[in-house]
Image (cartoon, rainbow, N blue to C red; front, side, top):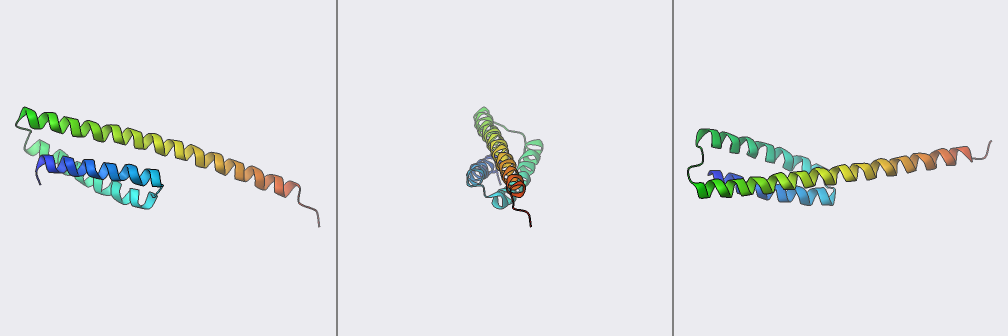
Length: 107
């Protein structure tokens, strides 16, 4: 696989990961993250073995990697927001359970 095809594939997987995050499909996201990690390692190895030759390729690669970085940051923010929402829901649920237990008739 060429350097640019690796970068494009990683970009495609990143867009899919964003979609899975929005859909809260955590199992699919985990599998995809494993694929992304492997691809990222391949990309790193490719760059260290065969550095970018042309300025045009270098600029395109930088653009793709910046898009991936931005998407990753957006995904992290979404996950943190969803985590906070789940913690709030859990807190409300426990509060309701405590109230239900407190007002439960004796005997």
